[in-house]
Length: 386
Image 1 (cartoon, rainbow, N blue to C red):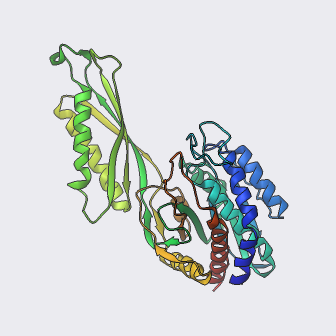
Image 2 (cartoon, rainbow, N blue to C red):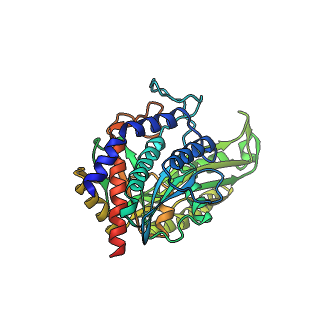
Image 3 (cartoon, rainbow, N blue to C red):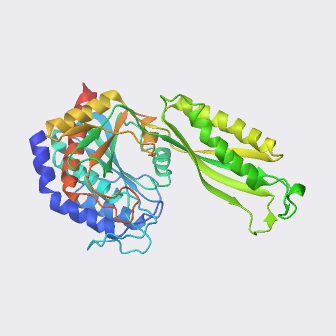
């Protein structure tokens, strides 16, 4: 079947490039993907692939149903774009000012749509069901939880997702068992002091000074607390305080992120930061509170599913590389809390990285990605049935 999968995906390449370029011209932000959803629904319906009646504001879920009963596996693509002004100069560049598929979700959608089309052509030979997630709102990390809440993962026994990788050579498949991407939590720190005239600072409690000390102290949270064998990040990206040059404000607001691969380190950082923020502020006579907004957990690939993807790629003749970890985050991890799965890099070998206004992908990888994910689905159904 692998040769037929490859041939079918290759035959779709021209069409899938058109799909990707159509989506690229019409980027939509998280939870605004109404046109994108309608377009994907139209493509699926034309191929006879049923769309399930899930109650979703954007995004959709479809199924390729084999002729015989069997397990259910899921393939996931994300569909949202970014608030980025495109600077690629491509003939199919974004037609919406200030919006761009600068992370390649149009590429992912084309790849997974292609896999669905290939599998639909093989459905009479399949034993089981392949559920296809076209997920909205990955960029704001809300989409996976939304699909899960609607019931998308009910009955799913394995789940697979992908992301293009500009710094991986085009044609390569990056696979790694275990942690691949970090958990991501937002931190908000409110520092409260006593405002007053900037010329009379002794009559104030300056939250800017206390907040600055907190920022500097946080730089040691990882280096002097977390084991050097455990990757982790604490970064402050926003510091807001005051509106006038001669007024010491009464409050400062800091916002940042913490990243970790280990759940234990994630919890360790929360405990440490809570204590550190309060005690540093108290040293300046100020008060501080920290709030954590929980984001997605770490993307952690099931070893057996990672091995399955590796073998599927090799069966198709695709070169496989050890996937490099990144402290970037992905809400695909939410699905992995409910079923074993694997998140895969597809090398696109381009100059600019994710979220850059000149970001591009190598479109020659689309049909290869489609073949890979169709093969993964077939192999996963067979493996789970055994």
